[in-house]
Image 1 (cartoon, rainbow, N blue to C red):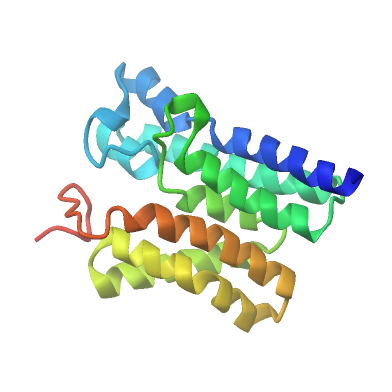
Image 2 (image 1 turned 90 degrees about the horizontal axis):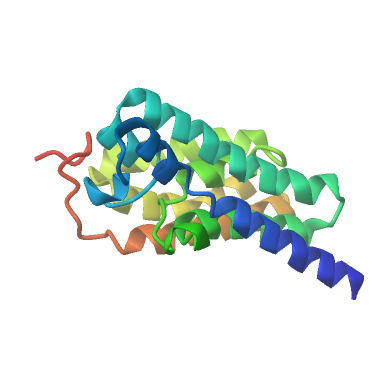
Length: 197
């Protein structure tokens, strides 16, 4: 029972960490308004960059990666086991995408998912980055490229590691990303580099 409680408690903490809306806070600090009011309507690093400039965007990117790292590091640090690591990785990305502290309107989860991979499989961060860049270049659409990345992340990690645990972590964060981006499948992001006509 204690193991289950530990997993649940760590999962809640991971979700709350993910729910820290750094894009919203940084946007208000830099430009005095909510970045979700313009652009894509999301609070991630890309829309923050578009609305508030490079410095704000890079700061949000680092903070979003950091909260993903922190959530997964906690599961590793407390030796809560592989299930806790899988749950925490998914929970922190869910928190970022649907944050309780920002009306459940957050970012898209890529940076936070990458951060969650760093404590357990740093190469996974690189693989994920490579996947999303390749998918966006091929499909010429940010959301569709990210959905494909989410679907392929777990299998790609499996090819490199043959580790069931790491693959399940990749599948967990990948599923959340795919679900989150699927809502924008048909959207034309006119403010994005790769989606310009």
